[in-house]
Image 1 (tube, rainbow, N blue to C red):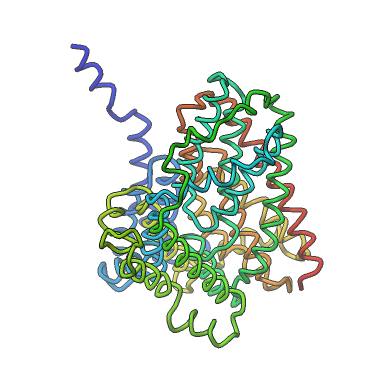
Image 2 (image 1 turned 180 degrees about the horizontal axis):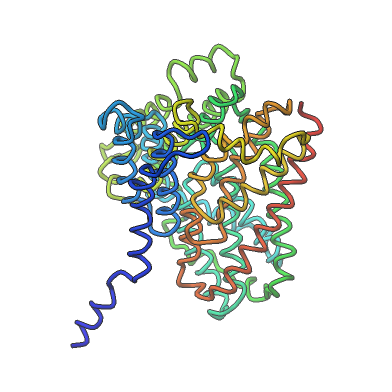
Length: 493
């Protein structure tokens, strides 16, 4: 009897059925409504698909809304056929790059880099008796590592490590030390992952922005600005957050790195080779995005392409020997193909769906762009470049925290870009601000995958305290971003 009751409780809640119905009605029914304003029938269908994607990602999950969106896109009349729609979404170069890049980034975690790096970086004498400095370094170091390593994979590892620190130091389950640490990990990885849009869906947003405005994102410039923001936010969070949430650091001084295990003492040869090749690839990607007129950069961008570059990275790692005398290559495909750390299908499908949709919505046959610009024209008309920049940051911060960061990031590009160009502002700066802040979906569980993981951790069950932590982080982040990008706009024209 009890087993039956337990099984019955696992069904969908009534609201889940409501969310499913709304998602599908938006995708397949919205386009049946009469067109309004400047929209065409095709534009109505694409707008409905886009709204359905945003709603489905925000209230349900990622996989099945993405699959339904692919079907709806193929039937919308914008691509010539269903085959053309599938090819447009699943056959995109960005999607291919994401897949090959996940092979390498996931392998770094699987082969033990994370635990080794934790031990190596945090078992230094300079941290003895300095728990606040220890915490700052913990968050600061992994903010930079998130540029290369998957936020999700590293986040899962660091949450486990912070939990071990809390347990070994004797912190209670309700201690603010846990919430404060988990919140710091969340924003550290989020900021690190958003500093350079050279991979994943951020690359898609950067490419879309370049197509719409004609101004490619200068990766070096964006890295400089966001690196400054990240450093300021981490420092402010560690110091002010400790006071706001009354964090007790006295027990942290007893932390013993030996708890990480013997395997963490040495970095495996296999991991060293993967990291070396991956870092070389990342440096080449940054070079290509920064020195865009250099002949070698032109070759990387236009001939090999970034998708081909990361494909080459994975292929090389699957050929060169591991260095461990096991007769296997550095990257063994069978080791990573079933690992969640190696391939994130939700991110891949998000990229596949939202990037083509966002691009399609800017095209003339839809009539969507004139309608969206008309809505914001009273707000933007006659405004200074500085106002447009600040408005973009604030609105994007709100939107990315109530829905899908990928979807809303893509939606804002065709809205903001015409006014950026008309104002005479450097489109590179505005694009960098939009893409950076689009990464910061952290307040609600559905805002991003890292936010969902954070809010779902059993170690921090108090939803109210979790919300206070992320709202505090969001405020620090918003203020710092406005100030630093605002200052940058004074020097970049």
